[in-house]
Length: 300
Image 1 (cartoon, one colour):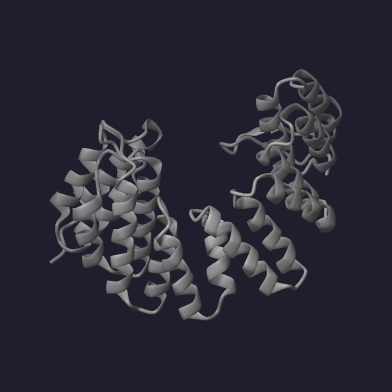
Image 2 (spheres, rainbow, N blue to C red):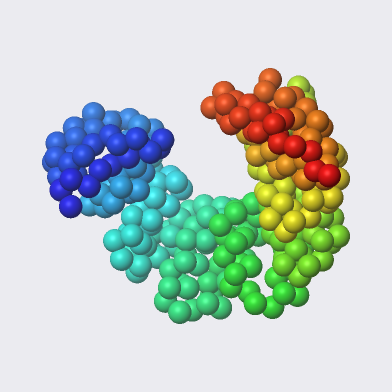
């Protein structure tokens, strides 16, 4: 246990001895950021992820003082308590959060987890619905909802209801997934197009896609690729793909679909157009894929 490595966000080991990290590094960092809520919050989140729960709790208690019990700190406190197997205390914190921030939805999602673990699925679903009605683009809550509600008509009806909320787009992706699961690809694609149309409204004056649009596009292309819907993926991409995405995933799905349909030159061209915009971390991946498609013999 003493030599279990700790990793940073890139998967690189940052410390090899947990006990030395616990006794020396953690106290030094907490003390250094004792009066800096932003840095302290970031460090406490990392402590929570690495399983240093007592130390995370100490940091959370200080954050509650510094921030006047802000929503994100109360939510973090609840997560720590849940990880410590203290669901009753976690529930109390979440109820305080709901009372203090009545227009917010994430606390309802966390509370639903506690209720489900307790075996009260009906109350858990009720909390999910409450939270999603306030913040409909919660990916995890939507996934939990579609897993827990077995009645397809009930689930579809609620997702459609959520999609009418201003700026709601993720419910349409989940609704499309339900249709795909029922092998109704035309209904699914109609939902996916509505989601992309909604996210395109978020573009600023310069016309570049926002994060929501990029996530929606790559989610749809991955779903269509997984289902083997090559022609549908090409038609969707012809309408919604842009080389200006910072990640290459939708473009690579589009290129693969073109290649699979017998258009290798078009596939390589799509990848080439992405290089100007894609994040530098992904450029080698795109170039490698271009070389692979260029070298692969065309399908007969």
